[in-house]
Image (cartoon, rainbow, N blue to C red; front, side):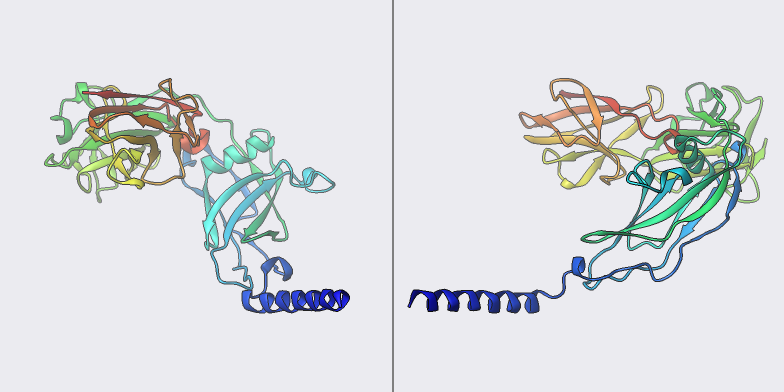
Length: 359
């Protein structure tokens, strides 16, 4: 009798597994998934120049990869040397840049592409081949066929110049105006906060004086030498300001470090933005906190974030999962200081510093 019961148990188990497969649907790991067509690049021969390195240099595009189930697909671009894409270690040294979910292209500025290819080992001012492929990920990864481009990188010049940004936000005092640091030849970058109620106008000055300055030209984005027309910011908030004296263009991008965690109102979903003190080059906020966790992130996103590897110190670490513990509720002054001279080409530093002081 027992052997018949055992047979019925095995048969029932097989029927259960078959039914489960039908109800759960087809797993993507059991299906063949491929790129339906080749990937494309905006140019197959690129000569990079430092004076226009903040401009787009390469656009990589690819077709949509369809998996058997409906869910977001994450794409990434991989760059490698032709000598490193074969054998047991194939693509092991590739530089991988995440493009995002359900996106079908990724653009790279000259500075970004120059860093990628020099990190791969390309020599300045020498044309060399670079291989590109696309990675598609849902529950498993597949790859496009690779394509090859030829890139000539440049040798990044060490630059230390500054220009200055007097405006309504600080009373038009050029002596205490925010400084924009030269990050590439003729390209300047800095940070500032426009307080609520302050006027939006400003100028860009060569020195801490009015001997030479730039104002708006034909449009607000155009820089015109000695123009009496003010540049204007879009409204209150913190910005990354870039000015290109090679192209006579400037831009203001919303940009703010903030505190995040259970000690502040937004929890882990929404950061509380900090304001930038351009004279001390420090991000600051004075606010009420409750008991809970606190760490720092950029632009209300987890893409760039810092947490303390050792919460007993004021040093915070890039992409660290830890947080500070706020032991009691009250009014706190929180500061955050980071050396981010040129995030585009150098990346964000591995450490920054902070203070958390109860008032």
